[in-house]
Length: 385
Image: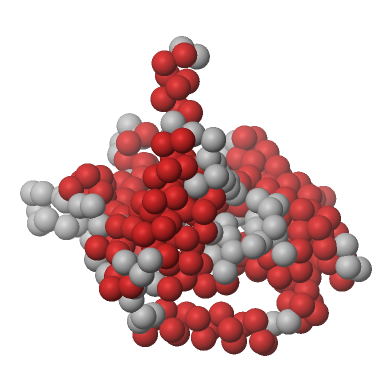
C-alpha cells in the first residue's frame, strides 16, 4: 500500500454514534424489502404508472439514496445524520429488492435467487454494523473528534446531561495526548466546559428520553441476573431445538424415496420446499441448509447449557457464533426456498442476538467487543458499544 494512502487511512476515525446510524440503515434496508414484498404479494404485483409507464420501486430507492447522500453534505446538524441513515437504508432496500430484474434476461422480479441475493447484501450491511459496533478507538484524536461533535449540540441546545458527562470524559482523555496541540486544545475546551459556559446549551431530557430511561430502569428491575440468564438460555434452547428439527426434512425425503411416493431426489425435495427444484443443485442447496441448521442447533443448545451452568463467557461466545452462522449462511439458503420463513427466522435470531448482548453487558460487565463497561448507563449507544 502506498505510504500516502496509508497515512490517509490512519487519519480516519470512527464517527460518534456511528453504530446508531448504521443500525438505522439496517432497519430501513430490511424493513423496506419485507414491507415491499409483502405489499406486492397481497396486492398481486400492481403496475404503478398506468398502461404505458411502470415506475419500479428501484426508482424511488435511487431517489432516497440520493437524499441520504446529500443530507450530511449539506447540513451540519447531527440530527441530519439520523435522517440520512434511514433514507439510505430504505433507498438501498428498495433498489436491491429489484435485483431479480437486473440479473435475469426476462427481467424476472420473482426469480428464486433474487431474495437470497438481497439478503446477502443485508448480511454485508450487518457485518459492517457489527464491525463498527465492536470497535472502540480510545486514541486522543478519536476522543477529540467525538468531543467536537458533541460541542455542536450545544449550538442547537440539544446536549443532554449524559452527553455533557461524556463530553468531559472524552476531553479528559484527549488532554492526555502526547501531541501538544491536541492536549492543549482538549485541555482548553475542558476548562471552558467546567467553567459553566455550556450550561445554556444543556437541555433537560425530553419525553421520549424520559420514557426510554424509565423503560431501561424497568428492564433492569424485572430482568435481574438470574432471570435474564434463564430467559437467554431458554431462547437459545428453543431456537436450537427448532434448528436441529430441520434434520427431519432429510428423513421425510428418504421415506418418500423408499416408499416410492417419488422417483427422484429432486421430486422428493420439492415436497418440502416452496420452489420448483429442477436439478441436483437445488437439492444440494436444500440439504446443505439442513446440515448447517443442525450445526447451528447444536451450538445454540450447547450455549444454553453453558449459561445455565454458569460458564457465561464461553456460553455467550458459542451462542453468538451459532446465531451469526444462522444469519450469514443458513438464512441465505433458506431464502431460496421460503422468503417469509427466512424473514421471520432472521428477525427472531437478531432479537435473540440482542438478548445475548444484553446478558453479556449485565453478567460480564463488558461491551460486545470484550471491553469493560465503564460508561454511564444513559448513553450506551455510542459510549458503551
